[in-house]
Image (cartoon, rainbow, N blue to C red):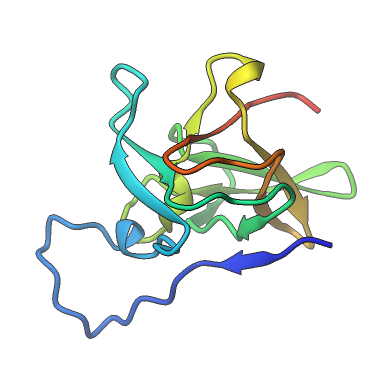
Length: 142
């Protein structure tokens, strides 16, 4: 059995400095936090705050629904094995924290697996993730 952790709800009435994108405020901060990535040139990354058990799921990935891949924050969504639409999280004010998950440079760095469920994208922990681990997904064609 696995647990699902949905994105933190952010009220539009909260007053934060304009330079803080809404996406940064949606992170489930009991389990995860943002910090400079350990990958050179990657900007911010997501790190575990606590041990996160294998199979814990996060999501769904949020962004602008479009029909074209226009940024490095895009995921192609499929319906019956055919491209349906793209979710583009390039706009930090129209997305969530999942946009900050970096890509693993090698399969051995991967600790998240992306998968689709009912037309939305989620991330699942592929193993127990220790505190302060750099959370990374791996891009594959499968």
